[in-house]
Length: 307
Image: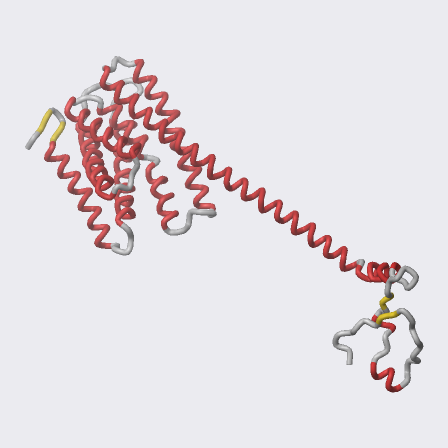
């Protein structure tokens, strides 16, 4: 079939068909889940497989990207890049059909397809590209795990949600930013051509855009958590003060009643109130236990429940 250098269209279409078949098999086996759920499951499988191949190719098979970039593609690199290209074709078509991604992610997918295709057509750049693919995909399972936790209701306000967020942020920053900066610097120090440097700089810049968005999200999330914590703490303090005031009023209720009695008298035009304990009951009045004496300027307050 159509083939240019290490680019084999037949092989790439087979890989794209394989990823698509895996997606439909997952949809059939677990129809209760959404289409996006199954697409992300395919993403996890791809990220795990490609990361493993990239690690083996970089650290065991060679060449070493920090010193020997820009050379011809090896057979392992061709298979890794072709497998990855087949996945991105599937995922790009899925995203365009369901319209789930924004312009940044669509641009990322499109540039990834262009870069992977150019690597196979040119027959070079496999060393640095496979290393970059491995660094990009190794953090992807954490991102998908975060989405799965949210979908199942185990993300918001849970320790697992915080652990996944921090693990993803730290690993992304270390691999894509720290190691990515070292790789790009060493790439410019080697005898690499313009197209390789342009591709490396583009991928590196996209990584920074993603990382800034991640930091912005984390800042807004934890500032909101902090503000909610401050509000809840102030609410507890106010409730505690109200309880103290209530206890104080209860303990001083008798004294305040006596104060009302002492401040009200006939001379000031006030009306004194007889305490309940001094009011005889009907039984005492009937049996003559308590002598009745006339009380002037006094008002007898009704006693609820007295019989």
